[in-house]
Length: 225
Image (cartoon, rainbow, N blue to C red; front, side):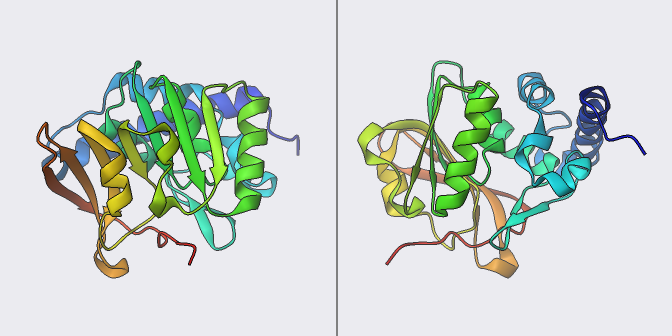
């Protein structure tokens, strides 16, 4: 059997977007919308997701399922990746902080939507591979560091938007401090068995307004003691 080529992957990527549209429409009652922003779907259509998973499972990259990437971690299913980017709603002029780089896929998507992305990854091997992936594909507006995501990246704060791709039982205080007034933070919130995708908006007075959406299951946000 011939190996898959870029034309095959492009077809699968278009199919992935169609599946995301179907899921969004079917969950319109829970989400409060029947469609995600076209600019989010366009960004996901541009990013070659198969470069951000282990080569042995590249042929599965566009299936709407989470996939293992090592260290007991996964890359989120495409629908969840799209939904989180849509909820975050980054604008082209904004600065975004991502917590949990993985192999760099979500950062690549965000790089198409924001001016600059800073991403913190606790697993050094992931950070190294993500940097390689992003550099090879020309995503030059993403910076990565190895560190404890619960502490954020204070040197470049405040951020307009913050996305956390691991579950926490409470929002890390450092992240709220690094979020500008008028900014937004999206993360899976709650104990592992009761996580919900959550949007936290910070108003001009610094008060946090939380909105919970659908149940999700993410690996735990790790800290360095």
